[in-house]
Image (cartoon, rainbow, N blue to C red):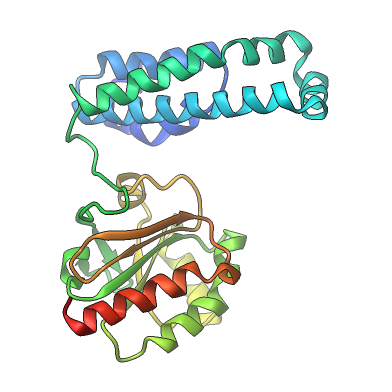
Length: 260
């Protein structure tokens, strides 16, 4: 992989997985991409993946230190020496995470889109179910929910009844719900929709270009964008019972209708 793959843009799709582990050789591969890849964008993706992976290692180390039962279970699976190494490495991982974030703010600034709440939503270019090119910017003036999902994702499918209710409640208003499927084959999506009514907008992201651009780490991932194109809410996973999505949409739709 290091010889034939790590110097190409294709490595971007594997960086998050590789950086999420604890194997030194795997982490060194991603570190090499960060330091030496010929494309700045790929280096930025590597920095973000390494920062996220380091954060995860810190959280696990802290949990192991505080939870004896968890530590015992980990030791049974991985061995005491490995677990102790994970705990001892927390300080180093925390320092590494900050170093990678510093690189993203300085030498790699502007390479990745700002997806924080309050930032202007970056453009998405995708295709609809008819194969027509579609853009997020074409929806400006409306409140937009972007739902990155897949037909094989249980929690995503579990959201469908609630989404039907939300879409129906906003019918005729400046609102659009866009489900962006990452299913490998578009036919998988179309056949699913034939059997499971989903009466809203659908885009297909089979090559994962949009989901990678929007830093999607799991499904469903939802973003709510106001009528001016600003990200106002985001979440990985969603519990309809919380009411946060509905409340955010209702507030933003009122503002759109008032032209505020």
